[in-house]
Length: 434
Image (cartoon, rainbow, N blue to C red; front, top):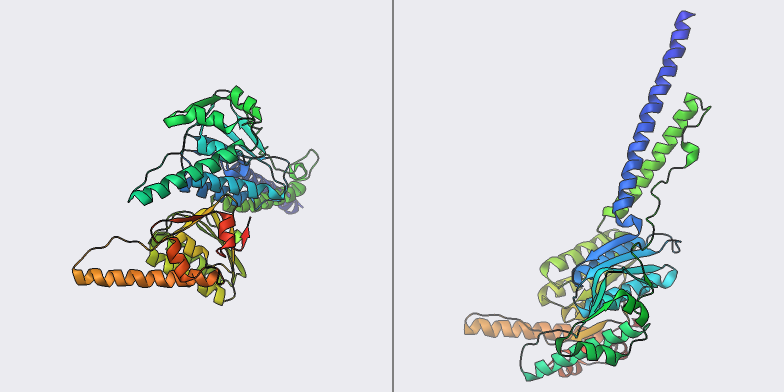
């Protein structure tokens, strides 16, 4: 009888020890989850600091792509807090379209000015359903800035394009404002900076609200009270509760860790080229596409925001993209910001080619800098002409006969040929404007 009692007591002590271990392990995992929710993009609030450029637009794409993995409609808005003094118009247009398209299925984005917004940041802010500015922040507007090189024709083309970008930017900035464009022009003429405080910005309709706290941070406690120990529970019941609580916390941690730290777009079957066309960036494109081919992924979207770059590396990437289509992948190419030079040729690989409404398409002749002996120069010139003929032939074929090789060469014979989405669509260079 004494032996039986000691065995019962031993089993009781074992259950108590198991409960202690399981509850401690569950608590440790829950604390990790709380830290991720407080510091990562899981809290639906992200700061972006610095000039608007390709890295900034790429970060915005990554953030909104991950947020897009959540349920379509959430009660709480997604917040992008900006402190940016300037940057690039093309990439501000790309971010504008990223935000606009993200909101199309019922989500709400808040863009907040938490310090300074240069012209480019103020432009992309207008895409958000809610525009917020802290009391001591500023919007600083000024004329477009740029550099030009080449002959007088090249300078003329560059100035014309800069003016196009500026007009485009003012149009987006003023869509929801009571400001007149002439007022901006008067205050920014010949390099002037127009500093607009929060009260003025609200009066002009550039923002919707002045506040320091954009919204309360989401509650980090996700624990179901049903699995917490309660008065009257037996040790066996507590053990079952702790085991369930631990398993649920570990599953949530695995989901959140993957969501918060992964830099890949594999979950959305996307390949991203938001920078120059270089051997490195093309290697990233081909590596991702080869992985999709091996996995027999039925549909892939190549997202492009590129000023162009290395023709040979880009041509190699085009081969892999075409291979994916021959292997059964339904390849879509989507242009954000711009697809210029080699970026434009890469966009033609899509079975379906799309372009956001604020993007630009640019074609010019193949260019390179090379040296060597006279015979080497002849060979390299011949190779450049072969590359150009190959690329123009490919692009002409994709237009369905709307542009011949001769048309393409004539359009960009001595200058860059920039096209709006509507122009690209009419020439057969894209299939859809989104």
